[in-house]
Image (cartoon, rainbow, N blue to C red):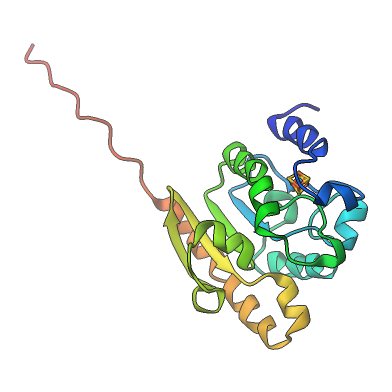
Length: 199
Ligand code: SF4
């Protein structure tokens, strides 16, 4: 099988542009459909992701699957990735210099998939799109940024650490189908009216 994404995954798997390459077991580039309309961007691979080379396969991933099911979405129809593609030691937050080094891969994924909606999961991916915002203020809201609709959510892992956030996250994802429908309703501008011939 060959596709732009598979070619990109090959390049990412060879990347050693930051220190996270030292401790990784597997690179975790991303997972999902190349023509996905919705792209979810989390923070970084954890233990299970690093073992399997796939994003969101641990407890937070199972909760994400539940959230997708709650709005009738199949994981195979969306695209899921992280801001950094290698596991930070001890599951610490990715450092700004690691996010910077990995930015090129995320940018190319966005370019190839060209999703209608980007859902940011957690504050690190939120910071890429919603500059200077706080997740507690903007979760569950969307904005058009650089010609794409961006929707901010808490990271699913937040619900595992803080049970009270579970209901918030479950309520936020219910807004996604409406936002998708709206983004698909945006009409293309009419072509220039043709000059009518007099003859
Ligand atoms: S985290 Fe990103 S930049 Fe760092 S080594 Fe892995 S793929 Fe390369």
